[in-house]
Length: 122
Image 1 (tube, rainbow, N blue to C red):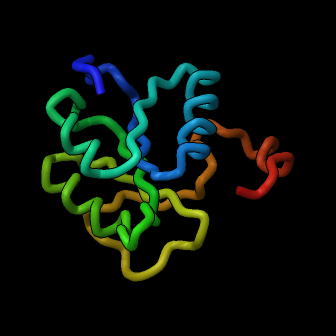
Image 2 (cartoon, one colour):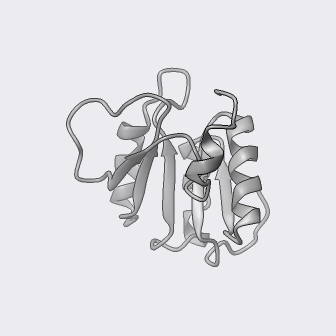
C-alpha cells in the first residue's frame, strides 16, 4: 500500500474475495464514490492513521480461515470508527452488537434494486 492519504475516501470495503472488491470498485466508480478496499482487517489496521474515523467501513461477515467480521469489527470500533456495516451473503446471525451499525447484503450500496435481478449469484 502506498503512503497516499486516504482521508478523502468515502468508504472502505474489507473483503477477502477479490471479485467482490472489483465489483464494489466498479459500482463506486460509476457513482462517484471514493472506495478503498482491503483483503483483511490487519491490512486495514496498518492504514488507519490515513483514514478518517468518519469513513463508512463495510466489513465482510466471513473473512475466510474462520475469521468472523462481527468479531473483527470490535477492533475497528475500538479505534473510533463508528460507521461499521457488515456485508453478508447470508442473513445476519446472533445478537446485534453495539459496534455494528447495520447489516447489508453483498450488493454494493450504490447498486440499484432494478439491476439486482439481472446479476448472477456470487
